[in-house]
Image (tube, rainbow, N blue to C red; front, side):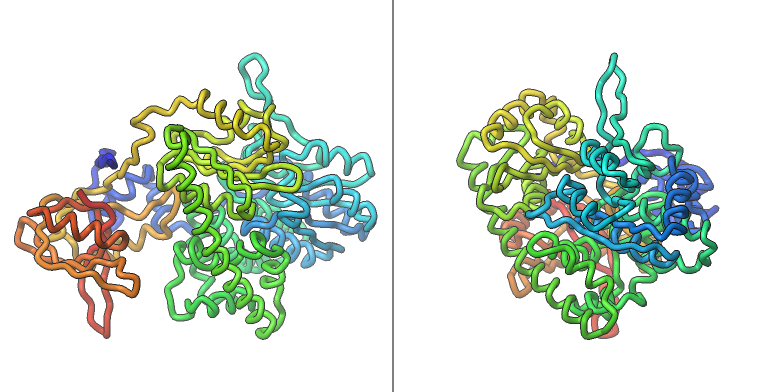
Length: 570
């Protein structure tokens, strides 16, 4: 069962509320997100892009700008090599559009997930040599490709890396030493000696920072950077970066612009998903628009998503948006099938006793491994790897929980894998099929997760009676948006609510509508989304229930009423 805990971070909430003209509850929510001090609170509530760190703070930025300035003057051929996911596609688009704007002779290549694999490979270097490419610029990849970068250098090419993944390292006398590829310039804030203050950028924002510096050098008006905010927002949310500081400002600014985007492709993707009249939030990027952009790289070719962003006519954009939306529907069905098979394997084998789950689905499409791993992680609250069959080896992805650094644990098993990389919370790898069982065994032998760490934890921001909810408070909660990783939607809780009435509604009968009464005699409407029958059976047996919830204003046919969305119950 979940463990419910109350966030107990202290501050003078009344004083903060008075200073910033917000309810003390809002002040408490901000403190719970570790936003401390007058300057940080002000930035959190009203920070703008003018306050973002200078791109010149990033290690090698001056060098990377100097190189391209020289290459452009020489009319050298530049190739961008990106990645096939949402971050890689948007990174590629940002670099391509930005470099073309300053006069570069530039083209792009996004690797095919199946034919090429992730990142820069030897055959892509050979193709670049055949095409007489002078300079390669990577985006969302390259930091772990030392051998391939060396091959490009041996062939006389210049290489600039823009990436955000963990820097490979080796342990020497108890200290970590970075293992960097021999590129001419490396833009990656995760380098230990990089002074850039935000270490948690996505690949597209690293690319955006590079373009910002190049625009400054080439005298391009700063206003032209506006076109990139929405793409930075899409990539930051889509690649599940923490929505804190710079990232949160970029996403906030990008969401404001997305509704009225000038990009034909994004306009039609919004229309294809019936969001023209919606207030587009981080949720819509994470669960509606983003998966459509990702779908082409999963089931077809990511070049189709790049073509969507590059679409010049409404007709072309509408056709591509329709294709991507249909691909995403297919992806959903295949994901569900893979998830059910993974659960069956776990429940019917000794895997159910493992602390780190490694599930081999040889017939599953390799592009779905990460999504299925995420679903397994959510169901069992354990780190999960899903591996799929390939022509020469198995490939897979992992998704982790907060107390388990996936990348560091993979480093301990490096000898078993052909290739790997990633972050603390997510990773990708390729491995020979014969090594899968030993990989699973060693991960579990090395695992130090305790029973307590494996127990799902619900952190309650504020135990708050429903009688305290007002329209003004709900409107102030919107000041905390956008919500996502690192800036979660607030969680409120109340004990001893009596259920006066309930009914199951919705096309799929998975919604419960309730009328609740709190101990002060105040009634409120409630909605629960999920396993409706289980919830109804639970409340029938109880005189009262405790719930975690999120308050909102229900607007229907011109009328407004307060209601709570029930998230957990006991």
